[in-house]
Image (cartoon, rainbow, N blue to C red; front, top):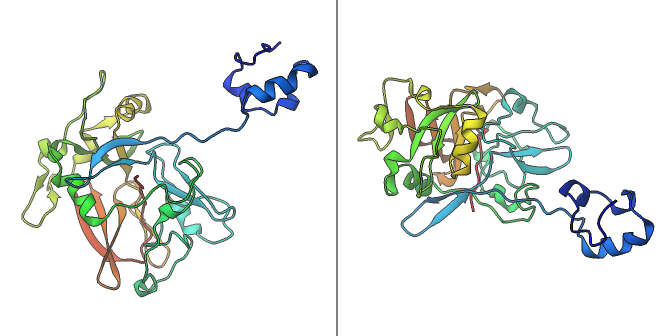
Amino acid sequence: MLPYDATGLTDEQKAMNPERLAYPTELKESIKSEVSFECTPQVVELGPFSVSETKTVMFSSGNLQYQPSTKTWRFAEHQWEVIGEDNQNISDSYSGWIDLFGWGTGNNPTYTSPNSGDFSSFTDWGVNAISNGGNEANMWHTLTKDEWEYLIHGRKNAEKLFGLGTVHGLQGTILLPDDWATPSGVTFTPSTEKGLVWDDLDYYYNSNKDNYSHNTYMASEWDKMESAGAVFLPAAGFRDCLGGMSLVGACGHYWSSTPSGSEFAWFLIFDSGEVSMLYLTRCLGQSVRLVR
């Protein structure tokens, strides 16, 4: 029998319809008045990260995903989670999920075109209510080109606060918060200590091409890193302007909100030997990782 003051309810019981719980009828109204059965989605944030001399942000808990058939937005359940080849199924009626988007398609996430000029304006994906990200519009936003670049090269100790690696079997880039302290039981090696250097063209490069191997975490180990605020950007690949998928698991492309000319836009790109900012055609389908 549940306690009369309802303070002993488990989280599972609190999430149930009180009319279906097996406790005495005379207690139902009392318990309903004392316990809220509405669940508020928990907002998980990772950080803090400096993106300018005066601004810090918190990252979302995973890459952005969208289900066209229900018009539902969410963050990936795990930071290493990517949709992969199924991004080719993009359509308004598709009942699966996608996580690669043309530039600025926050108002039309299934829009595709082989012509970069068809992506002439930018609507931030963060204008949407994200179901497990607070479920309110305009809570999140996309980093600019300058903010991405400050994060990987401009902030204090930037060269020690990122590294390529592998999490739960998927390759990608690890970003550490400004106040990083490595948790007990795990290790972290910055890629700059394995030969990745900032060169004269303003990007990190290493001809070794084996940088994903020096930080490797199983799920339980990554839990410790994540609890300390670490971000993992999985190498989700990209969808080309004709709809084909490329480099899933090998290369990461993450949009910024910054255009370049009338048909290009800037994004963070990485592979096993490079981390940099680049601009290419806006019709590519690329990953989105939001901050607030």
